[in-house]
Length: 115
Image (cartoon, rainbow, N blue to C red; front, side, top):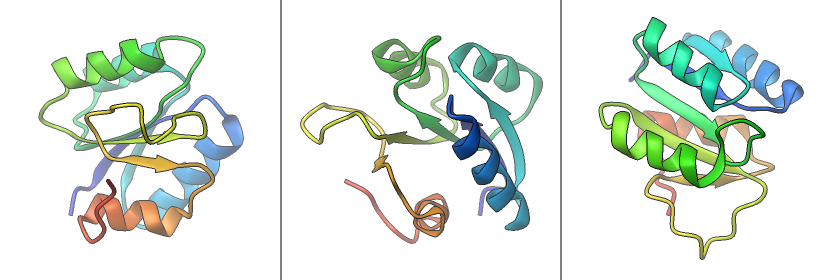
């Protein structure tokens, strides 16, 4: 199981509670509130899994997805969103908000596949 996670989420409550949940599960957790902060974390830390919101005020959306696809091929990437519809093509698994944190943990562990 991957042990180092980067959570990229602009909503403080979600970012902080998800950080707490994943820390209690034994993961080393790094956080960022937008794509720019995430790039800083990726430069400073070895990250195996990226859990990222799709829509963020700074470097989010399609540009963020394109960045992840081009530069983060070594990491497992999971996108979360309350905005995306299933018809929008995203090259990574998408978990739609609201979601259960234990469901996310199963996706990370590879026990559950998201279309």
